[in-house]
Image (cartoon, rainbow, N blue to C red; front, top):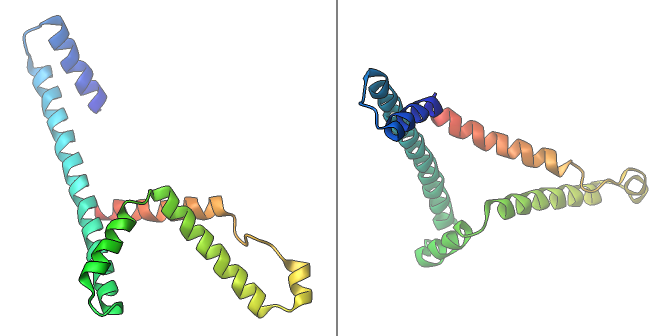
Length: 140
């Protein structure tokens, strides 16, 4: 719908036509879209703020309230690209599963049933992204 509104306004401005009721309707549609986007962004910022505060609180409790070190660490984490973070998480999960298998299976079972990574990393990545998107949509 927004693309129709923009096309309508472009047509009127390019042609130098006098503004009519359809143009006003298109402008109102555009304004409504911008307001919805601002609201969605605000919700996303609030989600980030909630996670940040929770992480800060947990890190403070675990690290004897060493505020300076923790905030510096969080700033470093925020500079890391999302895909790098996600790949690191998937690698950690795979290594954890590997360690569990090594610790719990006999050598014979390991040789027969060894599979690494245990899970399809692309499917895991897609699922994690889907979970994140669901959280964002639930907040909208």
